[in-house]
Image 1 (cartoon, helix red, strand yellow):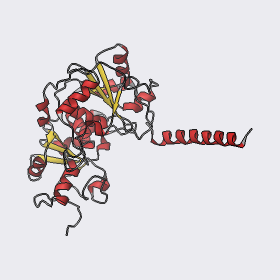
Image 2: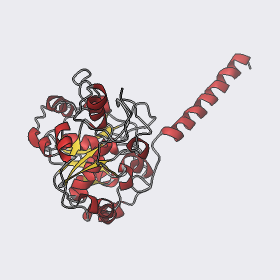
Image 3: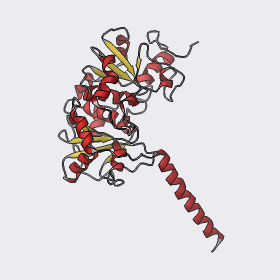
Image 4: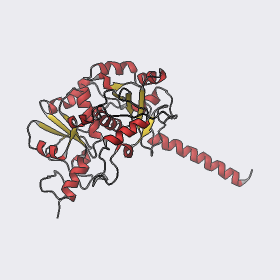
Length: 329
């Protein structure tokens, strides 16, 4: 056998081993989740219809029901999507570059309508959203679609991890479908769940409001600045509850009883603003508070720390205070 042939074979083996290692390190981790236990859990949620198990999604797809399954999956990760689903990533449902002086904002109603039209969705469709490993991206998509006034949006609990764990098919995604003319049923709905910078400023000194910082501890205490933000710190007076505390080890949502114990005393009798770096992790907490606990007056701060830090560090607005921030010259 020629040395060149042997070398090619060795490289192929190493390449395959490397891919397997990369996939095992960064790909979706399979978890086994009982559909019955999920149904029992959902039944205790304030809005059980907002959540769905892998088996129910598979059944809807197999029966040919009007269901559109959308995965918010990072293309840099080696994740094979749910067969028959559509896939996108943050740039697909974020504002166009240059529309804001900073990144991470939601895209327009027109853009969302065009996106859902390309998936063949109608206002009557059941739309299921999912993600992998960290499911906050599915919650962000859930929030944006709900803000269109779309009634039947469902969060796949456990996401791609549970789908893989159930041995269900993956890989054959983004099917060719007839384009529809999706029109948002009630796009003004977002005013009921969207926090603005001015709302955040007013809430800082209002006893009937609470601001929840859903980021990691290092972001909250100012020791880390995540790329995209303009400096370290937190919004003064924020209560820190990392969004991951709402999850079980298998990435599914905790029970209503556990979530009530986590958030109940903090939000009792108050309106709530959730925020993080760019409104993704905070969208997950907003979903939990509203759909699981039935809380009212819960707003996701779309601009979150990126916008807030831009106003403080770049615009140098005197009315935008920062806690645990950097000293400015």
